[in-house]
Image (cartoon, rainbow, N blue to C red; front, top):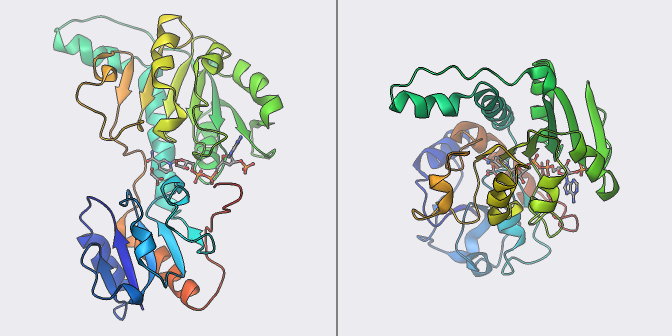
Length: 309
Ligand code: NAP
Ligand code: GLV
C-alpha cells in the first residue's frame, strides 16, 4: 500500500519529509515516478494532470492538498465511489482570516494609494474609510468563512454572512439561500468571497451582483477565480459599483503577463497565497486520513459529492 503525491509542478520534499516523520513506515511515492500503480491506495492532489487518477485501480481515498476540492470533483477519471477529503487546519483558517483583515485595513487606510504616491515622492494625506460606515459581507460561512467572520467581529466590524443554511455566529447577521442574497448584498460594502466552486456558484460574482452592493463597494476574492466574471469587474469599476478589489485567485493561474488586471490600479493582486497549509500540519491530517481509509473508517473533512463541497 502506498500514498501518492500528485501535482503538475510542485516540490514535495518538505511534505514527504513531514509525512515520514509522522509515520516512518509510510510508503510515499511522488508522481510521475510510481513503481507499482496497483500499490497506490491513497492519493494527495493539487493541480494534478487531467485523467491521471484513472491510472490507479486500487485507490481507497483521495485528498486535496488544500481546502478546495473542485479540481478533484471535476476529474472524471476518478471513480464515483472513491471518497474525497480535504485539508482543513488551524493555521489555514488563521492565515485566511489575517489575509482578509489585512486586505480590509489596506483598503480602508488607502495603503495602495500611498504605495503609488511614494513612487512619486508625493506627500498627500488621504484620510480613512471609517469602520462604522463599513459593512462586511462574507459569502460562504464554512471552515474559512466562519473563522474570518469571528476575527472581523472581534475587530469591531459589522459583519453579515450568506450561506445555504442559516448560521448562528456571535454578532453576525445570517442570510441564507437565493431568496436572501439581495438583502445580504444591499447591506454589504466590502464583499468577501469564500464560497466553494460548484455549478451553482460558478460566475456568481458578476455585474448584476456588484450593482446590488452598498456604496462604496469593494471586493475581496479568496475563493476561486471562476467565481468572478473578470470582465464584469472592470465594468463594475467603470460604473461606480466598486471602488476596488483584492484578488488572490484567477480564472487562469499564474495570471498571464498580458492580463489587463495587472495595469488596473484599483486591483491588488496576490498569487494564490491567502492560506497555505504548512507541511507539518498537512502531514498530520493526511496520515490520519490515510489510516482511516486503509481501515475503512469515515474520513475527516470528507466532501459531500452530491452537494459539491
Ligand atoms: P466549506 O467549509 O465547504 O464551506 C462552504 C460554505 O459555502 C458553506 O457555508 C456553504 O453553506 C456555502 N455555500 C456553498 N454553496 C452555496 C450556495 N450555492 N449558496 C450559498 N452558500 C453556499 O469551504 P471552506 O473550507 O470554507 O473554503 C471555501 C473556499 O475557499 C474553498 O472552496 C476554496 O476555494 C477557497 N480557499 C482558498 C484559499 C486561498 O488560498 N485562496 C485557501 C483555502 C480555501 P452551508 O454552510 O449552508 O453548507
Ligand atoms: C487553496 O486555494 C485551498 O483550497 O486550500
